[in-house]
Image (cartoon, rainbow, N blue to C red; front, top):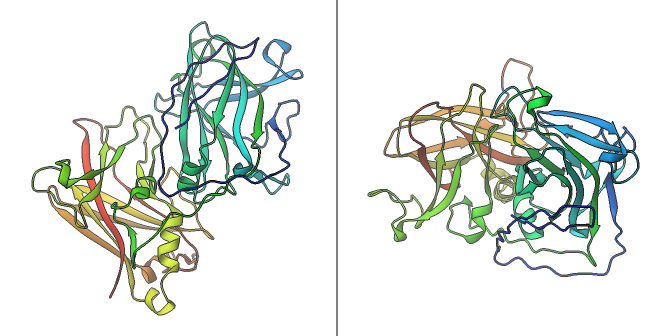
Length: 408
């Protein structure tokens, strides 16, 4: 995460702390470039400044008022209300659009700035982050918006963007996220106005080396330092799982539990659902790792290959679903839709469950006769592991290890 906010004469300074993550073996170099400041949205026109936004829950409208605009006469009014407490009001400002003919490469920019007006007399929380192809919304920074104008600066951590997205190109956008007020009543909701969303150029261009180095038939065994970044999550709620790589040599696993490969595995601590709407929780193994592993296979090996993984459920016997998407036909979303979705496995409490899926089965026709065929072997993308919502009780923990390819 990255946190830094500057203040202007007319702006109240916002205070944020910074957590810096170092990714080993990533190198950056600068080359001279004629980059210029880019105004993504100043909201002086409906199209494309508003019509091109991608929005989640909440109310969004173009407002004409010089009081709530820093440039021109218009700004975006945001009312982050929703019917459910665990809804996530957000909007995404695209960085690429084939229709409007732009594609901003974040390697050429150092940060994004925005002017944000908090209409309340108390502080309001807002997150800004990157919307990636591989992971959806991630790399967020939380800001405390003081009453009045706030000048927000979000710095790009190019190394982490590379790890989360697989490249610095074709980033879908930058997202702004708010806490749901749990109501559509304007009187009970926070209200903010946003203006002048800009990209600020680098004095040069960042180049980052690829650090994803796979052993033969490996996908992810959690033994390498970069692998902490290849797993992400997607949850339609404010109760995301807590993930970390644990080491048996440090006593970080339950007694008697050993990783199935090496000394480390991934620990996933999940949380009960907090309200009536479904959260569709899942882990996502990012596309560039899957792609590299599958494309390393020969055509003959692909016919005999299985994608395998090991799951240990610590607290309950639990059903998991595994989904695969290919980059040509499908996209994973909050409803767990994938190009190919396998129901199961059932993982008994207190033991490792070894699961495998044959590549030719992933590419088999799905659904009724005549439905499209997946093309995962040719266009491999992400893999997800999802689990059921639960309402009561303590947190539930499971472990994931040794995602790999085996040949029959």
